[in-house]
Picture 1 (cartoon, helix red, strand yellow):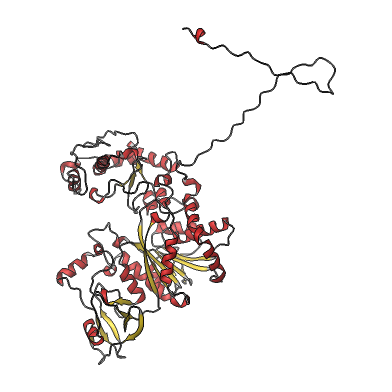
Picture 2 (cartoon, helix red, strand yellow):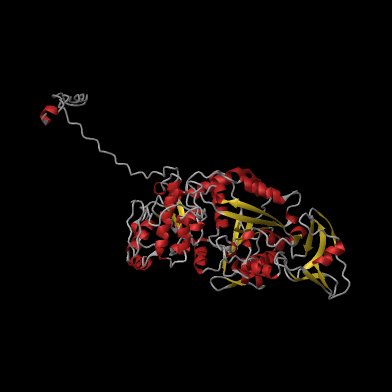
Length: 595
């Protein structure tokens, strides 16, 4: 049929009725005027939030902080009236982003939005050794920034700031120390160190303890990785060493044993050295030699032994000054039980009495979609908490009560592809810098066996290390070949990123895709986060917590399959609970933002 035959008949046009004549108009004939067309109102385009309920530009971290603060709103209001006649003076060392201060600000914003009085606090100083972090702290906070925690703890007349001035250390009520975790990390499988190995972690911890004993604040909070030697840290702070654990070896995870410890145990046939004392002129015992399994300093005065639950001290009777006494001699005279079921503790003098408790926490229990397992040591001076039967148990209960569920997947914290940060990053990969990197990354053939990582990929493809039984040429995502040849099988992966990655990384993506396929899941059509900076045998290719990213480390490179790229520094900050919209970020590189 022709177009004319197929055309439907139009309805007859009905003109609007003519307007009624105005009573004040002339008596001439009424003339029907054409109704003017109403202007079309153009509303501004609305940017909808993410379909999962969160837009990173709509203060997502602030919303999580508000939800955490709600259950303790009444408790904080009561504390403001009775326990805070003056502002709480807060100091941070190894400050980094100064997240404790940011958290207090977020809590106060949430309280003020609900019509409640803010928690009075004053940020008195920070301490950070990295220059770019010092610059960040000076831009975002008004408190002075000291340059070195060791200098801060050891100098009596003042310490040097990041600007070069010598300032006295302000008094403070609360100390938060996020001491270095590099030496305790589970990722350092071959070179883990203990507190006494003079690594960065040990030095910063001892300096923080020295600062605490010198200024004696009411409360202190130490943060570090979950497998840090927490029991030894408690012993250094409290001066109380359980007899049942003196000969146990290192505290914490068995994997936290250092290389020096392994050598010492091999030399001693597995038995640690013994705790030795020497008698002074006043016939008191001081520590002369310390085994690596005991958290006490050389020169500490030994006060005696008591029951773990409390009670009177039983002291050792010294015969003469200069006498050398071993722990076995002490146990014999005081009839101590040194077995694993012992309830006795060794007590040493400390500059100030502190009690401690340790909690192990996970970030995904507090609203953020990241598996970040950490330990917190809470130390308090008991004279400031009179009338409270068990401060440690109350703190643990309070910490548990702050838990909130994860309401948004990690993909909701990712920036859209149209964000200027993503656009600049892609432009850099396409530019001369990206060309230079790509020219050096794709040389040779990864499967020629020269690379030290080849053995892990070969074993993974043979089913070892929880791997997948796949052939060597099974490369379903990147289809990489030697000398920089690749052909992406999906448009979701950014090609400018793939050409700047080495063949190990490309083969890791292909192997992980095959492992997910074994579990009947298409990795490229699900939001899966893979740390491509790790070796293949260290990964869990099939994410066990959908919507939750693994632990984000400063040097980690998290590839998100649904985005086809790695997480950038600002996204890492968001997933760690740092509200980037409140911060003044300067010219920090991606590496610095990740740190």
